Length: 64
Image 1 (cartoon, rainbow, N blue to C red):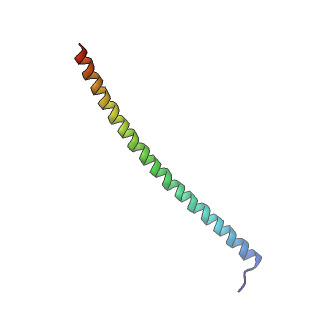
Image 2: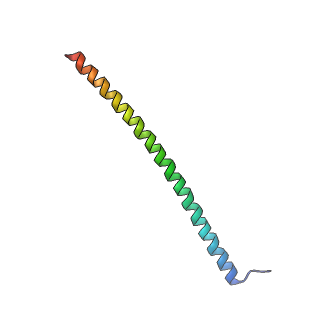
Image 3: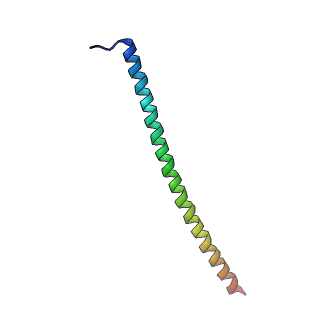
């Protein structure tokens, strides 16, 4: 059974909508992954700052 103009147009619309939904799904997953990476980076920077503060305090004590 050949498709008519209406069925063909409907198929194009449904295909386009499904592609948009899939793209949004991928974007949400990527955003979550980036947020997780940023969280790990912030934690690492916090640890470095804490360690650097300890080193600076110990150097100040040595100078006195």
